[in-house]
Amino acid sequence: MSRPTIAGVARAAGVSVASVSRVLNGLPATEEMVERVQRAVQELGYVPDARARSLKVGRTFQLTLAVADVGNPVYVTMMRAVEEVVSAAGYRLVVTTTGPDVVDEVALVRGMARGYADGLLISPIRVDEDLVKSIRECEVPVVVAGNVPAKAGVDTVRANSPKGMLLAVEHLVARGRTRIAFLNGPADTVPGTARSKGFTEALKAHNLNPIAVAEATDFTFAAGRSAAPALLASDGFDAVVCANDLLAVGLMHELAAVGLDVPTDVAVVGMDDSELAEQCSPTLTSVNLGSAERGRRAAELLLARIEDNERTPRRIVVQPSLSVRRSTP
Image (cartoon, rainbow, N blue to C red; front, side, top):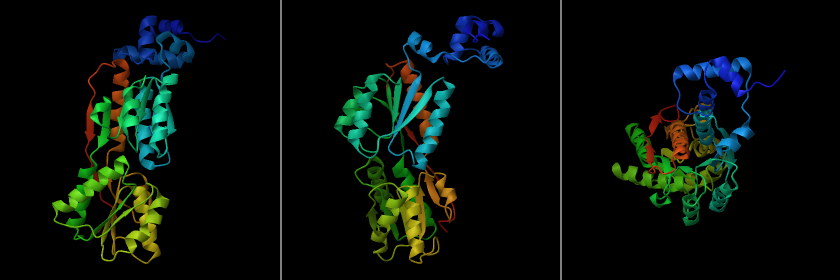
């Protein structure tokens, strides 16, 4: 049996070859045309020739998502949202890990010149002048899920971490918890800087001072457990805000190990509102920073940038919300 062709799809759908091409390439088409073409594709079992398609239009129809740690639940949520958007537009998504070093982030951005993807969506955990320069000079469109200076000249989608911290502190104060400590990740990172600043501002808004502040070496469960003794050495706190859910769960393990009950003795709030927040015990109150929404919006910006690279860069801020669970009274 011969392999189905685009001409065969056109005949079966009762449309032109050009119309089939528009639908398969994700270009604007009427709803009726899309339905007819997709039905014909399914009936014939037509599979586009990716190599021929790439040569014809000068694209790979492949996009890269680069995050610091693919094992972090917040990035998994973001990845799913990005995949949903780009696959609907006919693109494959390749996910890669940069790790915590900005040098590796820079190398990845510069490596995009090899032409293995049509665009890059990157969520950098650390930012310096070299990274900004490499993003500005990148040979393919770049969108940043995070915060980089405006001079980078790229579309960005970021969370409002300071407002998220305010939601967390307001919730604790409303529950009568005013002796609040903070467990941050590395302060020299983009999220670490934003969340530290947000925590300080949130306490000031309530005329409070931090009871204790500890800095973990990473944003991981293990780092949260390792940083816990620094907080436990400080007496008097009745609540802890953590810079992400992994740190919060690591801290709760150590609180339990020394006989402190969550939330009776210590209330705990995380950030990211990842799947982990509902999987731990007690379930974790957490600030939802809109990781899925950030992924969707960033993917949409990247697709629009690929179609028109002269567009004025957009800087989108996704607002947070609070998911209250059993770790706070």
